[in-house]
Length: 227
Image (cartoon, rainbow, N blue to C red; front, side, top):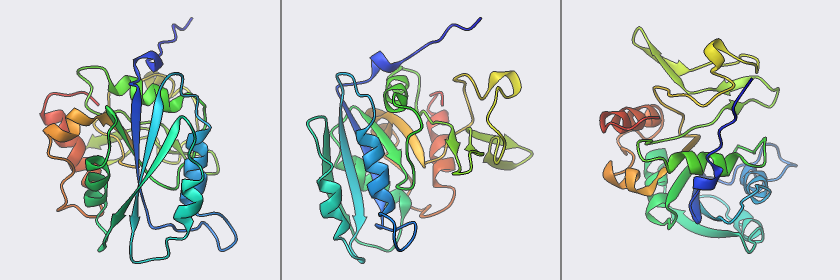
């Protein structure tokens, strides 16, 4: 038998969700990716918590989509728009968003994500509130249902996504069914207390594209935190 443990009740009053975006569309006829992302966020069960969505948008492309994003605001979800001047630097965009965030927990989130279950945000935020935890990630899936990410693995000098393109299931030792410690998690979905981000002086902007989340997680662990 299983004992289900939930950390939802630990979630803070305000959760900030930092979403870097260029306003790209999946196809010419579809919504901007961030529209689907934020819409999915507004459908999360929030309990007594509120969500602050911080959209870090690039100024070198069309920004008319931001008006549509703003219309997704509600009593429980506020939306803040923060301008970013390219060139592209994912780390810098995350840091800019965090600087403009007021929540006790910050979730760094890619704009091409949607939520599979209604309580995921509260579980992430609640787990991030545990004192020794420096970052929390989630299982991520491709559109075809295959796994994209189940934490990072480090072996023989190689680091990559655990269970990449695998099928959903129980996993070795229940890895795909239970919360467990990992080497690191992808910056596509990384939640942590703002005080942890501050203690690390944020993401390292010398990693503009690749490996920024790996470096970040290594530094989190060097500070004695679990991931």
